[in-house]
Image 1 (cartoon, helix red, strand yellow):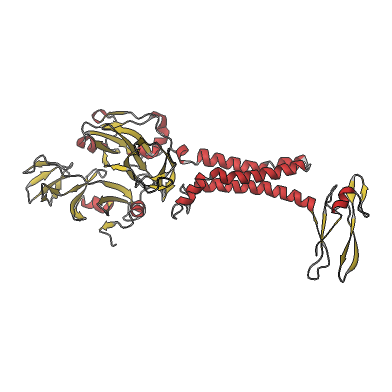
Image 2: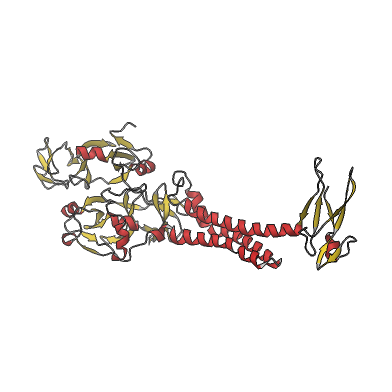
Length: 475
């Protein structure tokens, strides 16, 4: 039984036990309870009742001898504080979660949470505004209840939490603010390049035009927009996966614009400007959003030291560093050669560990990975993938690698290395150079067909190619 007394009477000063003293109402209440008789309970100056307040009297339970008084005016004050604090806290939590699922935080990249991250991202303001309104309601209620200026001032402090979180998540921790796009993309002829000849570049050749891009430069920006052979291209690189890819950005006849939005399974993700769909860098596939399931067309990518790139593509152009980002590039010094010590982008020199390097290839629907260290020791591997005979060749610069089809003019060659990165085939009595071109014998001038291959961290290759075969590793 809950007895409410004096609610209206106190407000109108009509209750027979109510009286006024020094501008504050005090009252007494008689509580009737079976077995106890009448009890006269005086309320003194210590009671939190204020002018026009409401008193709720709750009788004792299970033998307790003291009644519990709840002052609804006091409850209103407490609720106003709770609304303000909780509204700010929950709004801040949503802000944090909106970046947690798409950035490399502990536990955020292993699970299949991309759809949760996308929902939080797309419904961001729809989720946050109600909590901010709740916080504002609490503050306004407190303000209208004539709280002291100290309480009003202190209750402003919770609003700094969502304000600060918004700044941190949107202006500091967001991917496209951490890694800015190049302001200018300029090239010089590779023959005139003053760059370090041992630096590693990635690039391709389209319609007879070849261009190279320093790995560390693309690694910072994550994407470089350019054109090669009259075709628009999107040169991409993810330093956490060590994945370089070159994509055709044309979607449904439009040269789509992309921005770096975060990562999924440690791989960079881009958001297209038209639909807001998110695309995975390593596969070129839209993984969530309106265009989910679509895939970008890929151009072959080659990775070589600049010296070997020049040898293979002597008329190529090479991208120059954007001088506006000299300091940012310096942060990746040594990355291309695996010299950085970092949990995210550092290299493990052992075999088949998460941060070990592999050479990955795809022929048809079959993928296969070759351990970098073993290939480095052997230099030259003969294999067959999906009934295609291949050569995996890692040059002595420990940076340039090639994968070629061993079939040429219906002849399958089985060469062996003879030094100076050259190889000789006994069956055809042909000599081949490090670029895959026959330099002596009946196939003089012929060039082996290149098979797209990637240098990648093992954790990335096995994640996006779960059925991959492995060379020299038990399945």
